[in-house]
Amino acid sequence: MAFKGLVVLLTGASMGIGESIANKLAEEGASLVLLSRSEDKLAQLTKRLQGINSSGKVIYRAVDIGDYASVDSAVASAIEDMGALDILINNAGLALGAPARFPDLKISDVSTMNNTNINGMMFVTHSVLNRSMMPHKAGTILNITSITGLEVPPFPGEAVYHANKACQEAFSNSLRNELSETNIRVLVLRPGCVATNFHSLRVGHVKEKYDKFFEGFKPLEAENIATSAVYMLQQPMNVSIKAMDVVPSAQRSIVVFDRTWSKRNA
Image (cartoon, rainbow, N blue to C red; front, side, top):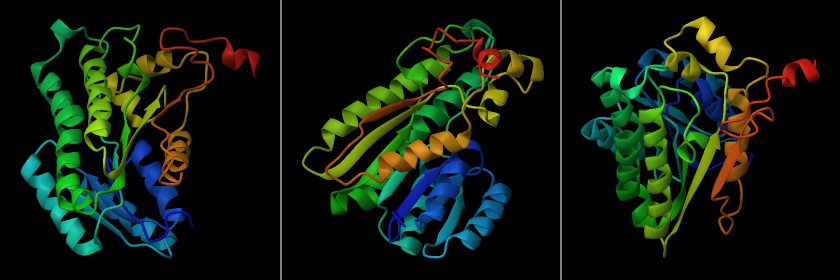
């Protein structure tokens, strides 16, 4: 069990990529602190993971990561229960309003995306660093960003999300430099198209729009991202896979989709 004895704090843990990462780490023996807003889903997931994790402990804290006081309280409480945090996975994130262009977005959607995708990542990281990693000068931070952080998506409705992900990339790069002279690694995992509730949410759960998004090819599954995350995290401390892009083979670039893929590989 590669993660036996390690304590991992994971945000956005209750569904999709977060839930899949939690599954993988539980199977590998990690002790887990699961963060999400949905207490019901967290409670169910925690109970299930406790049943498959024979060597680690699993707890949860229901919290809105966009509220620093709540985040800091949850992190402090988790450390009291679990001890020092070895790994932080910033996975929580959301996209709203597509395909509405920026002028047509509701300001509430703009605020929600900014608060979760930017403030949330920074708030959790700040608390974990100060309460656990900096005193020990050791740990690993894995930020789940997106390939959209590096290139402008070719469809409307992505201005805020693209800006959020670009900010996450800049934050990760700066943080990595600032944590020089510690044994704290900062890693970035950039998913491409993944078939999760995330993409359904960004198009307002409209099935026709969701199907159009993936027309002609098979997107990744959450488990593919989880497997990649575990691979990055299990490298020895003297090795940093600083950034990894994981995309469907049909997603040739952010602007080119091979929509004949499914027909050709039937």
